Structure formats: C-alpha cells, structure tokens
Amino acid sequence: MERHIDRVLIHRDDIARRVDELAGQIAEDFGSPSGGSAADRFMPTRPDITVVPILAGSIVFLADLMRCLPLMARVRFLTVQSYTGRTTTSRGPAIDGELPEDLAGNAVLIVDDILDSGKTLALAREKILERSPAMLRTCVMLRKELPEAMETPVDYVGFDIPNEFVVGYGLDYDGYYRNLPDVVTLRPEVFS
Ligand code: IMP
Ligand code: MG
Image (cartoon, rainbow, N blue to C red; front, top):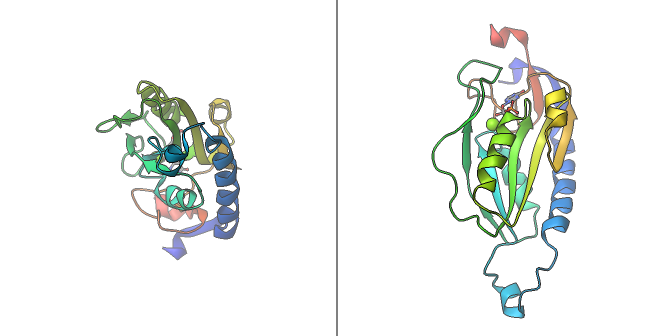
C-alpha cells in the first residue's frame, strides 16, 4: 500500500492538531449551558450533541473528533452513496437506507470527510433538516479548492486542499486506502 503513495498532502501529526482545534470550536459552540436543572446537567434528557457522520468516508475523522469532544454525545449514522467502484468522479449522491429518526429538538453536527461538489453535504443537510433538529451545523475534514466546494455552506473545515483526488484518513479509492494515516495522493499507475 505504501508504494502506491505519490505525495503526502497532510501528515497525521498536522491532522491530529487540527482535529483538536476543531473539537475545541465545536465544544464551545455546542456546549454552552442550556439552562436545565442541576439534575438535568448531571443526567441530561438530551445530549449536548448528536453527531451524524456520513458513511463510510468520515469514520476515521469521526473517531478522532469524538474523542476530543468533552460533550454528552450520541452518534447516528447516515449512509450516502456517491462514488461507485473504480471512479474518481461522483454521479450525484443518494441516501442509502433509513434516516435517523430521533433528531427532533437535538443539536446536530453532520460530519463528512471531504467537500468536493458539495452535493453530498447539501443532500445530508436537507434530509436532516426534515427531522427538525434544534440546531444543525456541518463539519468536513477537507475541502477542495473548487468553486462548488467553496460556495457550499459549511460551518467547520479542517483543511482546504488543491483539487486533486486524495485518499487516506478515511478516504478511499475503490474501497481501499481508508486506513492510511495521512492524506495522500496516489501514483498514476494505480488508476490504470
Ligand atoms: P461531493 O458530493 O462531490 O461533495 O463528494 C463528497 C463525497 O465524495 C465525499 O464524502 C467522498 O466520499 C467522495 N470524494 C470526493 N472527493 C474525493 C477524493 O478526492 N477522494 C476520495 N473520495 C472523495
Ligand atoms: Mg463519503
């Protein structure tokens, strides 16, 4: 796998530092006291945050981000299909399976790996809004420097990267390379 790597775009240490910063911002925005009783604060009737990761690309980011969040947190998964098989361009996303049911009145954070055309995040946002959350924010680890991506509303961004196909840190090509700890580009031979 290592020999398939062309360049390391973002090293694991820089990712870890940035994830910590993002979590700090998120904790500040979501964690302000909601005015419940002392008992509520000890055992809240609602979580401070419901994290909705978009599968499968966000799993590595999710695992790191969650562990940096000092909040009462739940996770509800959302599966959105975009790339299928050996392609590096999306044909437009679609929700796969059920939407999480119990989001009404919750403070929700959608988490995705990368903002490319922005269609995945826009669809996820639209669908989650149908569940009437009290608050909805969005977070992506990476955003490509493309007009569509830059114009897509998003609240938290880890890194802006050039418009290149990247893998690692949860991102895949044909289902592989998600377990690479750094964000990297692949050698051209891999695609042929
Ligand atoms: P969008 O809908 O075009 O914004 O695409 C977002 C989804 O496409 C992400 O959740 C990724 O799963 C996938 N994707 C976009 N760009 C890349 C990339 O460079 N490498 C791997 N997956 C990507
Ligand atoms: Mg994805």
